[in-house]
Length: 225
Image (cartoon, rainbow, N blue to C red; front, side, top):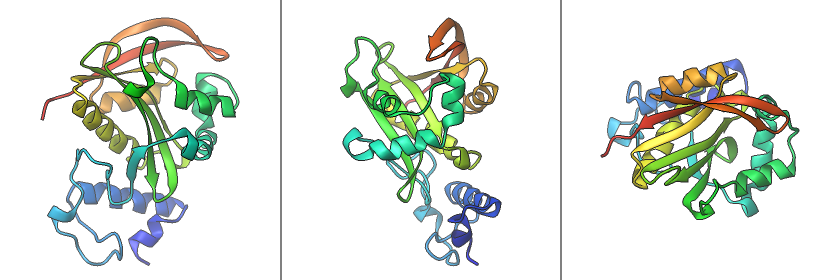
């Protein structure tokens, strides 16, 4: 059985194969032809790490999301990540929640200065992100949300998504990427620290849906090209 055929399944074996293919091809170690699993690709044809287009690996792609086209896909993603939603707000997944994702914008900021992103494997939406430019200050970008489906965690998807978000922020003139992580979400904070984010300060308790949270604002300095 070819590795690609294994990777497209849903077993534990599939998760391992998918991670191997995504990580090795992008790292230019053990390159594979993703169509057959047998003919090696040259390093020049493997997707480059940190590339600023929509292709983040041979298995995954990223594109902007549109409410009129992608509403059902985003709702499905929320349902596959409802453990985080329950932790954050205690709210059930609803059309209102999904509509808020598409319409959410910081105070005094124009929605046109933000982008809603989806990371796909083929037509399957695996993760979403909400990125705002020039917020809270010029030269900043703010990642309001990055949500990965439960079954897709641990495959390097978050790392690929962060690389793309940083590249996109840089292209819009940002020198710093900000986000806030819940105090109770210890695993998420560890992830962001691995991605090069550092603590700026701790925010006072705030109401989020049915819950009250302390959040930690973190930052990643974006180097110029």
